[in-house]
Image 1 (cartoon, rainbow, N blue to C red):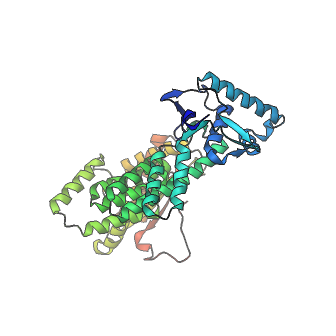
Image 2 (image 1 turned 60 degrees about the vertical axis):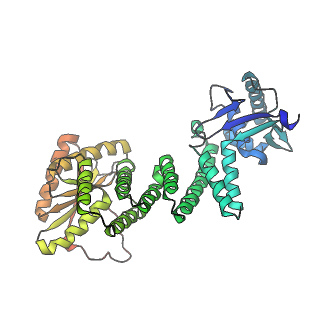
Image 3 (image 1 turned 90 degrees about the horizontal axis):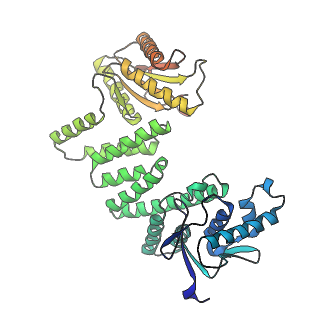
Length: 416
């Protein structure tokens, strides 16, 4: 069979398996998790390198299934050919075994998004020409639209391959983001990091978005992305923002200091941002953790001049026996109820933030240590009213006046 008569298949593996032949979608079985489909996908993913028969068998079968492995594997090959015939595809072997390894049939041309992605990343690594390197990384970046084969996300071989491809994708993002930043092409930089953060919101690609917005002096949008990201980390993931994200905030603050904005414009931005919180101004101020740090520093500096005392309180959700709650769904539910109790109980001059999925930090202005105990009891009573009589919280409190100016060396106080 000559090159012109080869069967050409477009195989997409990112976001789920799809097969296209002569512009039409082809189905090779209703169940996309079937072993014979996995067999094809593994061979296709290995491209021209192929995969040994032993490795292929070990990938497809658990050890418990390997008692009569040769018969099972031969039956799988037969089943695969039968399903391919049923699909209406032209007659061909599709995969062949040569010298103990499996390859795509030479009479079949496979164009695969995942294989092209891998080839482009490898080509980018090997070239010494920066223009070609960026072109290859951009091609790879555009091909990676979603996770590899989400319908098989629990299969070990897919997990291993997905991790490998995700690392390669991160390589593309960093290379392209850095390239555009160095060229001050902030629009292209923003698009790269925005797509990456939509795919992997837990990987802090939002920092690249924020830096690109700072690059075009769009601080209003930069703050919006920053606040949205911080909320996501604290509310959804139950973790505190990283140092990199907090440094991003500091960078924004420093840059804004040098901007000749008019006072009325600044005032309007502040009012708009305050309104966007959509909260009752009579209650305590609910802020992000980095904003809490800023409030802490401002209040601690003003204590001497104002003569007001300021206490910091840590509230920790526990079960009725005083132990940590392991069930994340239960913890998330109690977290929201405790936040409601804090919001209702605290005064307008107080500030609080979510520190982790089980903890809140409070800044209490113009109070005493004894009064802090009263505040804790009031919050606890309100929490029990909302969450039930078995709801419990632990608390610890410290005066800002008693805190040292610098953190002790070689000591880290992790709030438990």
